[in-house]
Length: 107
Image (tube, rainbow, N blue to C red; front, side):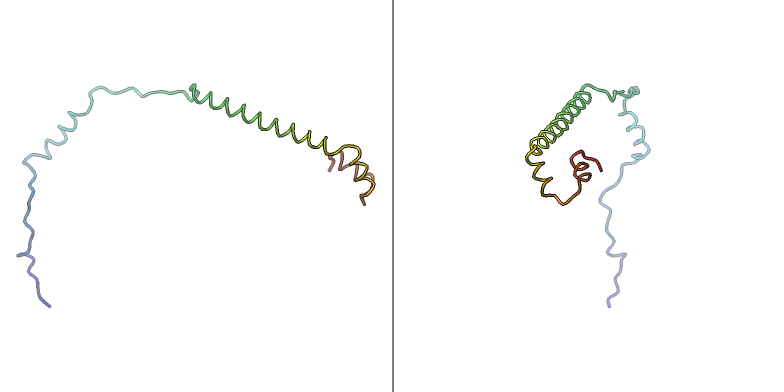
């Protein structure tokens, strides 16, 4: 194997840092910062936008739940008319009390 001489192949420096650069770096950065302290911005969690969105969400939820309950009770009343109940009662293999509990939603 060839032995390499690293001293001969050493890369020459192409960039030099100016003299005193790091001594002046802190001062130049500090001069660019604003002198006065800024006051923090305090925002209320009850801003108008959030309140409006929460009102809209609440109203939408009430409409969806209300319509679901309305149509469920309407469907049940339409579906369970007297003729259907009589047919179910006549052909069902369950006793009277169990049939009453089913109609009254008693568990």
